[in-house]
Length: 175
Image 1 (spheres, rainbow, N blue to C red):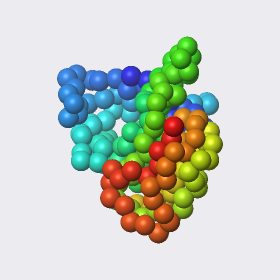
Image 2: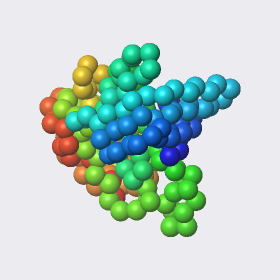
Image 3: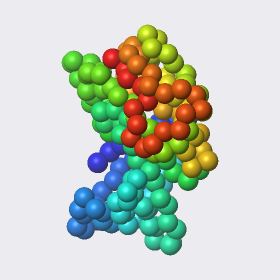
Image 4: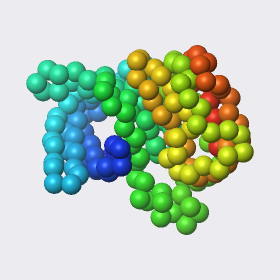
């Protein structure tokens, strides 16, 4: 499977291939990361966790990653020191005649994990662009800006600054 990963405007392709048997709970995978002139290859054991997954590298390093769906084919991946937005097959969706899956229907942005609302960047009635920041949530001592998965209008903002939220709580609705 191929993903496009955008880190601060730098887009890289990530190719993930199973090495042997893989199941929904995990397996062993070969990961190839490409972008600009660099190319990184790793083989990792991956196990599903309550908040996402845990990667165990051959050198013994372990990295836990929180994964939250933010829209059709888009994910927020929260690594220990960086947040990354990943899109699956974005080019195919953007070429779709109907405007792509990401443009279809109402989008409900939810808190990826328990935290505190640091900033609300939009209000009901605002027009937003794809990937425009909506809300900043502080979780695990990190600030995470949640972005709009599609262009549209803000239908509802269900939180206020300073509010504590549980994981999965509705934050913003985009129509």
